[in-house]
Image (cartoon, rainbow, N blue to C red; front, side):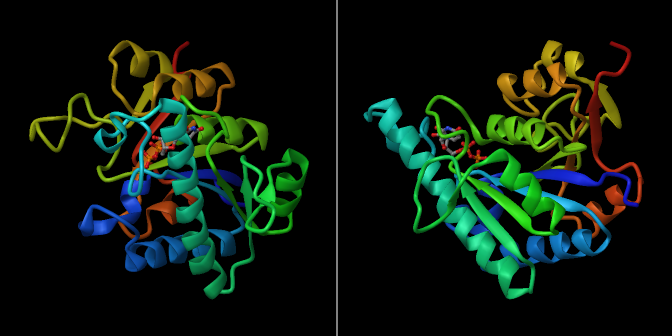
Length: 239
Ligand code: UDP
């Protein structure tokens, strides 16, 4: 048995952009798909939430003069584009997948139906949740936390560019130190911006463990499944 059986993996849109900083880098998607395939072979069930920031964000400067709801709809559709790219990469590797969208688009994706999502996972399919929560004013971090709670995931894994949660931004402060574990409450109190407040609060209220780790370091997902301490574990701690 893997250390965590059912995993919800959250990938930011930006992580798919690779060095380009925009759009979808096929090599990155391919590499992540490989890691997911290995995790499935190890016996894990994998659900995915992919952001849209590499294409469009509701709060970006490109959307500055736009109606917020309209812009958020664009952002949610961007997550579907990323999800389709990811689905293609996984299927080409022989991994069975289902894309479920929070916004109805019958020709492209199944609607999100919780019981059906769980059934897909039990059958060994990777389930990709597209279109965020389907609501404006939310983020895909919150969508990830919500879906993870709904499908009763054992852990939510947030893939980042850095190795875990630090006391300050490691990309700006070379003296920043990483936590191996931290409580939800400390993340909130210290305003550590691991995920947005709604997402962290959902995790906390439902005692859903969150692991923040670097997906670019090859083998990290497998190390996590083997029970090795990878990245930062956020849980209730002493609460
Ligand atoms: N979005 C939304 N509701 C949701 C999820 C996402 O309106 O439930 C929109 C929002 O505009 C957001 C964009 O989709 O900026 C892309 O998602 P996000 O910024 O979370 O992507 P990431 O930062 O992970 O790439």
